[in-house]
Length: 274
Image (tube, rainbow, N blue to C red; front, side, top):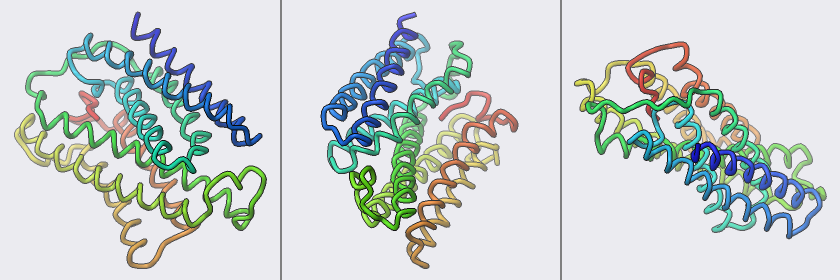
């Protein structure tokens, strides 16, 4: 019951934060943005309590069921964004995209089963923890990169003109550069996630690579992002092409990691670790 209460308090705070960022961006007010930051931070704190209570109840981290995975992904994404905007205040308006996406994903998490599922002893390993941490960092960095890419496309439609609202967002060159940097960070995190997953898989199932659907789709997502980085460094993919590629790649990754396990069963999907 405690977990449910704090989960909804966290979700409600993310909604308040979303409204605050929207008002701040549209009307150019500083006070709503302060409220938005405070609400996001408070929501993160309450969300942390919900995850902590869940952890104590299950005896393992929030990375088994779909409900736990998406909820913890949102948590790390919000934390990542709060730190990011604290280090670079000119990106604070990204909250108008990040925070609504966060509470919508939390709502989607509620569609999954909240039943407590125990982690078998054979799957308990330090490699699992490292694997999960880098999986969360991958999602968090990609969420912020997508927000940057969306803003780029919005500004590019006006040829980067200083419209009353978009003038409050960094210029196109900055948005393009930081979306690329975050994608590189996410790609590195994804690479480490796959490598540690392979090592953990050998520990748990006696095989480094068994072409389990989760392994295969992770590799495909890695190749999709690898193609982007190759195109960026070799052929100079920038601007609109870069923004659309990042957005579509993220959508593909979401489908691969969260939708495909429902249709293609394998060893990994039995426990939904991620």
